[in-house]
Length: 394
Ligand code: SF4
Image (cartoon, rainbow, N blue to C red; front, side, top):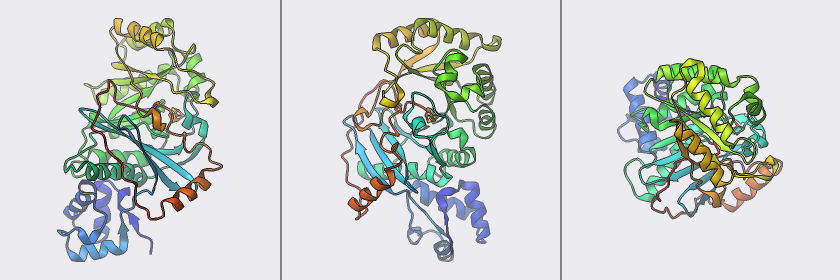
């Protein structure tokens, strides 16, 4: 008999599942808390559930984590996990500790079909969408692993950014229940503003997300005009900048006190001149006569050979930021984290991009880790950094 993975359900889905088992809704809430708040996967240990329910669950359900292939910790405390999602595919999640928060960067797809020029995941190509359970499993594993190793009873991960591998809005039906689980007080209880979906600009799905689950939104802009953005973010040919900014304003109508974070990867000699910055100011201040409520996050590019692109020199990044700031546009420059473990911006696919050898490498890793215990890591105390994210954005 096939059993269902309970990580695939948000609370509504779990309540419907419990109803099918002849159980009341409050049982679903209890079960949801056991799984997500306490990290429990063994039904026999869920002691306040009726024995009859535990027996039904044992035959109809399971709680399935993703196998961990590797775990690396950076000198700056960043931790990167590579998870096996089957058929030679792997995805990564990255934990970034800071003084006032712990951020987990989560993947939504194995590979990505958008193909942005500056992104190593984009160069890898698309394999498949992750299921809701596979998205949630990254948070479930990381949160409970970190609590154990930090010896903390309370929550460790305070923020989630959907900026790992993949374009989340091209996997919408799996994404939304995963977001609802992150926000649910009976699970992770993250506030709406502490969960960020980053998109390259899938306009119709931005509208749906605004209506269904208006979490914080980051948009990968990377260029101030369509000619350049067509080249850097191929999706722009379908949804050009004016349509994208209209969609941003419609999104903000669902969350009026919010702003859009525009991600802008700084590419040497490509999109990083003061003139580009001035064009951006014009765009976001004057679009459709009202502008867009936003901030900019300038991202140092992490070069990889296939891109043929280079990182902008720091003085140019600062000069660019100055043009934006002086025009009244809030601008931050992202500090790179996890460089030494390839967890920095746009490097998330580094370990899995050679898919012709991925299955072989995974088999070797499984053999090496055949006792299936994780190597313990030393969790460094959080270090102070100026910016919180990591991934070259998606
Ligand atoms: S930047 Fe994001 S949307 Fe673009 S290829 Fe990379 S993962 Fe896909």
